[in-house]
Length: 321
Image (cartoon, rainbow, N blue to C red; front, side, top):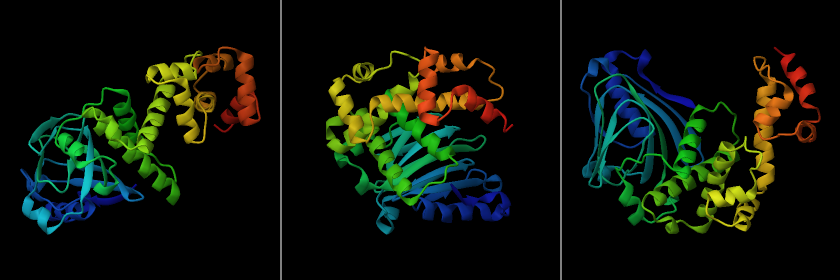
């Protein structure tokens, strides 16, 4: 992510103006009221994922307005989905008003008037996903039902989506242009699945979006259940109320297999633990922890993937410390 605005180094008298101008460029044009302008501060960091933008935003208490008049003057036609990271925030749009707590999400549309606020207290923060409304693979009648409503991640798809936003926001990985475009497409598909699921209209999703969303939900299930040595395609199918054949078809569409994903994720965590100089568990215990109950099976799979045994890998990795 790159820093778009940090008011820390600005004179206090310039901070509210800098925020108003930067918010118009980085998000949408709004009007603001600041309960304590002399103590106001804000920070915006952003990354581009093709036509999609992901931002982390922190700010002191404020109230924002986007009126019908402002919309007529400037409307980029964005969908914006905010994941609250800290503080108490609220939003009102399309006849819905919600008070939001950390971990909750809210969707709003730049083409509809809205009001937002941050309660008095320390700085609040959110992760904001923003993308052209034309990329949303859902009809407006579905999107409209969710605008301004608190989305509380309690189900598999919502949890996977929340985890993906927070992981991307915290990632230090170097991404190519094509990586960014693919990630942008994926995250919008997941956002659409969360919206559709909330109004129980998943059938409104195009087939390709449903497949992408189901794939990521299944991968999330696999990651949560890696320690289970009986994790198989049948278990994945049962957890998602589909047939094993559907599971195989979804993974094939993404260029992989269920077995490959399970093995890859297990070995990734084994490598992490083996490289940890503070982890003194026996090699076999680490393998068993991540779903390899037999030491011989763990050694064989690890050597096939890395070209060395787990013991050799641990020695090499820990020699670097």
